[in-house]
Amino acid sequence: MNKNILLLVLFSISGIQIASSQGLEFFHGTWEEALEKAKTESKIIFVDSYTTWCGPCRRMQKNIFPLKQAGDVFNKHFINVKMNMETQEGMKFGLNYPVGAYPTLYFIAPDGKIVLKKVGGKDLEGFLQLAKQALKFYDKSPDLAIEWEKGNRNYNFVLKYIKALNNAGKPTNKVALDYLREKKGLSKDKKAVLLFEATNECDSKLFELMTAKKYLKIIREIYSEKEIAEKVYNSCWKTFEKSLEYEVKELGDEAKKKMKKYNKKQYKEFEKKIDLVKAEEDDDVEKYLKAAKKYFKVLPNSESKIAFVKSVGNKFKGNEKIKSLVEKFSKKIFLKDKTPKTYQNYIKILINNNKKSLAIKHLGKAIKMATEMKDDDTLRTLKRYERYLQRAK
Image 1 (cartoon, one colour):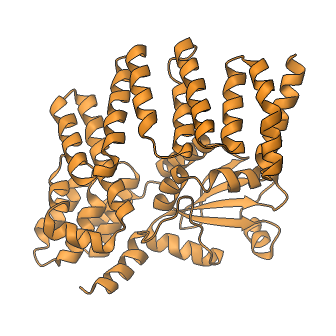
Image 2: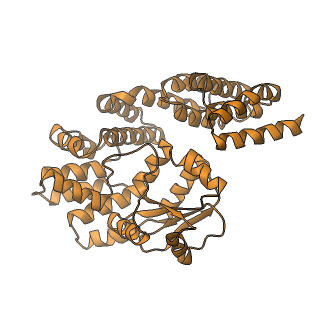
Image 3: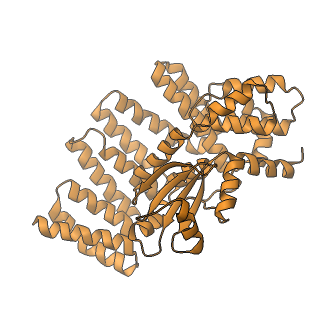
């Protein structure tokens, strides 16, 4: 099959992103076109119902939607749509999907039925949790399984079925391998795509085939370097998780070996993350502290470091050494990347650690920085901190 034709087929049927930005990628067609796209790709539509004057809407659009962690999930699993509820299109949308407060976050199935609806702005953790809930509620794999059992072996249908199984967190190995055994005349291009879409563990025949030279070469022509790296990382991590669940050390060793071979750039981060998870599994605070310090060093940017610091703060609640480490990390992030956002994060940790005097000392400088850099959202948050600290005196 001609590569260009295959790319078009993939884009229309499987929803593959040929190029990916850091944050959410929004669909710019009409609502009817979004529904049609959702049907074609067998995806849920995520709708941000907003107004231009809504503060929480602006904060999500500025602070959450551009984040890589949000983009990685929402670009893969959803058709993302922005709907300004004060435009003609928005008012028309509101006839079927009423909005009484902003933002209202809708997750809508391709047939137009509401899968999930939540009102109000969310932080990154809450936003990603909504995605998990929506995917759990919308599982089309049972319907597709009936077609499969009836003998439907159309290539595009099988890709859709595999994608639905992946979205629902169900195994794809048997379907993919059975199909490959049955379809002897399948082209290398189609096999490569099917292998890439179906692979989700590195200790599998699918991963072995996907990384074979003849298929990997084709995959590199079709998918971006970022997509391939993510596929390898996620597959290796899934196998590591399995090694913990079944207490099979060899699986963990295999995950590290495959990661090192096929995704060298992220290997150090992968290795340090494993040490971190093991320390947490062992409920060993000292071991966790050492692993956290090493993992923090290999994280690529302030965004990922701030997210990690937040997760560390939720471990071993109340432990003074953990609280001290979180504070130290937050200060390092700010000193490395002096922005209003990183300063705000540091001050928040100081307040949480009951170091109100030190927080007050930094607050004036942070407010000045946010004002000069015209970061209005961070400035509003800092002003709230200021009011809280004044009342806490």
